[in-house]
Length: 156
Length: 156
Image 1 (cartoon, rainbow over the protein chains, first blue to last red):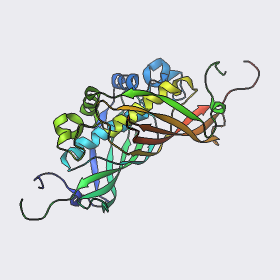
Image 2 (image 1 turned 90 degrees about the horizontal axis):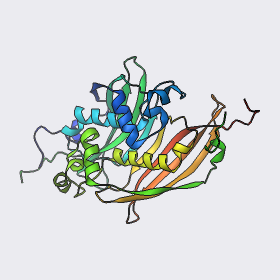
Image 3 (image 1 turned 135 degrees about the vertical axis):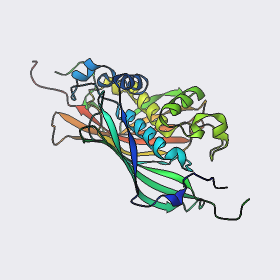
């Protein structure tokens, strides 16, 4: 049964652009994430960052992916009949994300088709693009989402 | 100056396979990660999982990526002259990761070349593959690493 207020496959069209709310990243969260998942010296401390190619503390690329996921959740995913995702077709870490950087961006609907094996859902490719406060793109992620098709039959 | 004991670009050859230490994932860490980064109902509680397509609590795919990164850090990245990564060329979430699952796997060197723009470093493509305790592959991730070339000149 379809749920009122929820977005379904049919509510996304190729070319649609969804705006993501901006988010500022702190040194503490960069270090906390890196300590758990990606403890390279340049993700763990200011000093380690200064001694690296980038010259400053920078977030793990995986952290930026996770922040982008949360921004997409808040913008539309949690309000969509989503079944999750089979994967990511590309992810580019284009510029470092440092402490105090504010990320903002968009998600664009790249393609949409009904699943051949599960005709009650669609497969939508979304391209997320985040930039920092200087307007430099820091990450692009193209991923696939499995989204229910709205039921149009008689009420159950 | 090259550092004794550290792995450099030349220490990786196409076809090399690195074994990752196994790791068991708890319900608590699945829920903690999802609460911060990917709060879909099927990542947040047993009940939400039961009501989903998968039928049980399952980890965010991004969480599995981050766990795979940590496993790679512990196996070799932290002992390598790595400058980070420009991105991921593909990531497939092949099967759900549930509470109590034990992930293990390998990383294979897929390709290696010296950077054209920065001849003091190489670009190595690594394919990470993790399976669960039943032998089902749960994730594959192909990513690029920027790794220093060992200096062979006179001591500085």
